[in-house]
Length: 247
Image (cartoon, rainbow, N blue to C red; front, side, top):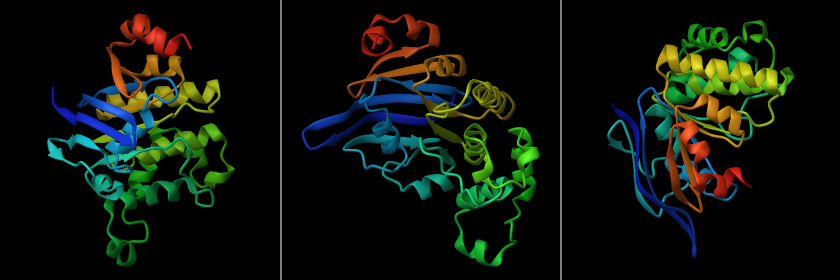
């Protein structure tokens, strides 16, 4: 099975503190991978090293076999790597459709096209497809700021998948979402994986959400991977129970 993302011996040190310690793993095409661990385990630091927010102290990151270690987030965007953040990145004064078009333009990354191209950069049809897919059609003309928090989370996910990326990294997509919207978000993420063969990695504290969404789980503790495998096997692993589930 082809690997979309390869992480090899990645480390990140802050002075005398090692936040990520010699981490290696692959993400396979069409896979939903979960990354869990207690607070302070290094999950966000690992994400940020992969995504160019932080420069790793050692190691290598490859996307589709090409080295991308240390590339800026905008350059990774153009190579098909997208992400969401713990804090929502929607534009509250823009409509749902405008948010999606803007997200698509970010992936194109060409200022001249924005200045001299079509006003919608030719992205309206794709935006409307994503709006329909994430079941936001009744909200297409509403400003993002008028949506509920759960609806904004759906929009945030739709923006991440707008340009058909090779890889999406979702940072706590379930955080603060009520149970009804959470079920809808999980169902749509399953659907985009099944129908579009979308590949993504999820950092999440909501254990039931991540265990029911992901096909494989990595568990990080004190900057190192301590367990890896199918959700049920990880759930029963004594090391995981001690480091995370038992807290």
